[in-house]
Image (cartoon, rainbow, N blue to C red):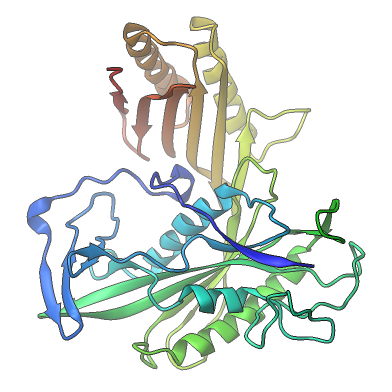
Length: 391
């Protein structure tokens, strides 16, 4: 099987499913510090307990491994996986690295070449010169078989690094590291070049066993990297990727923290689920109340504006409770007054029918682009709305 790496671009808009809200920066709160390695500046205080970003020598430090994933035979990955993996890891990081003490920086330790090697298969009897197999590969070596249930699948699909910096006087240093291991729930492959695509389904038990074994190796390797101290906290999260045809991303299954050396602590299980609404083909949803609330909301706005092209939602649950609902409304409206009136009615219907105990985001869009936006954070009574002018 021929493995190649494909760089996926991660859009700047952060999905509500991962729990991040809009940012409102206070320009007066930014600060600048200098170290032997250069001058650092933070972006300023952000709302909703989000991290300040780090700017070094006047430039935002872009990660060399961000969005890099292992894909087989030129197949495209599920872009929802890339987005939710990133924001989900930051949510986990907030449990260990408080936003009032740490600043966020894109991962700087893992280079493109290092990430490529780690994502490859280990060297083995059936390794080919065209493969990315190498001694540092975290994926197991091929067993030479091609049967869907007999072959050795690719378990690790992508690696994500996030760095958390701390300031002390006039200096800034690495205070913590978070690593996300994107594990396949389904491995897609071909038996011959450009041949038919086959699937190897991976059980949760195998996914977790492989992920935990890889986490130990990752911690040991990162400890040896320049700039990482023996007591620098390292968080490793195991992310279960959704299938390629899924309309939602995957979820984190568990995470662990290494506080010193190569040792890791106890694993923390996570109970997160995603689903698409409305439910189809008589499918039983995760939460029938949420499904019914969305159905009532959708019916109401459709009855008032019957020319809607579609109303769908992505729901995110934590421990069985709804934590986020991202709704997309596709319209056929082109007049500015129609959009204004429709947005007002959508907010009225949302306030009446949608649950108040979760983040709600509503995007109104057409083939011409975004037309309006509405958002209500958990516990808030009213929606923030914005209608985009069409000039």
